[in-house]
Image 1 (cartoon, rainbow, N blue to C red):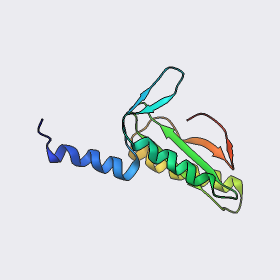
Image 2: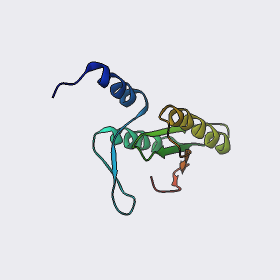
Image 3: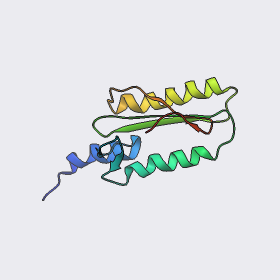
Image 4: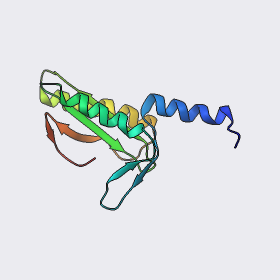
Length: 115
């Protein structure tokens, strides 16, 4: 199968810049990655867990498999950390054309919802 470079460029840019990927959703809402892209999100979450103060992590995963996240750490207040994490996530969400809004996944070290 011959792959046209002009076809691959947007796909590679999407994956490199914003975390675009293909996902399958299994019964019960568990997400299984068809590529290694989800591990980027998982690594970001693990990195976030090591930060200490006034932090928040926001995520969104679209129906098309694209995803975005944003986090903030060591802010002056937890509320500002939440606001900034959502703002950062929304930037990627808009680039990926994901219809769902970003929501807070973790506030401090507390997980608030499933991915």
